[in-house]
Length: 100
Image (cartoon, rainbow, N blue to C red; front, side):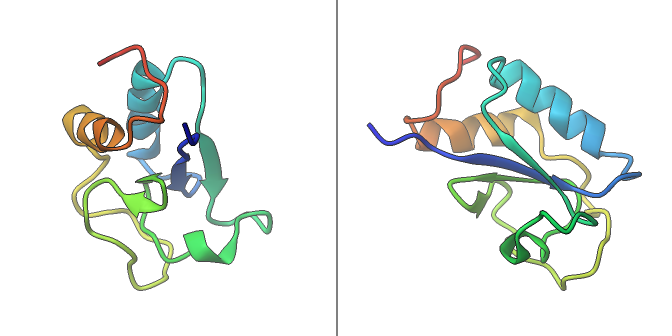
């Protein structure tokens, strides 16, 4: 079985990043996701076109919105909900979670 990837993309100071992180912590208590800070030079270019916070499962935005304009901005819809993230993880059964 292939291991799935889960990524949290955000910028420091985003008021919704903490809520996204808390949801991921509840769904993936083993910490099996990566975090990318938009202002960091270590963040790959492919993540720099997403708003903050964005959760990707296997490179797909869990909300279905996809890439944005490339500017560091908060998402108008806030953090993805627990239900939306759970649905995305269920679609990708290789992702380990104890919260389903």
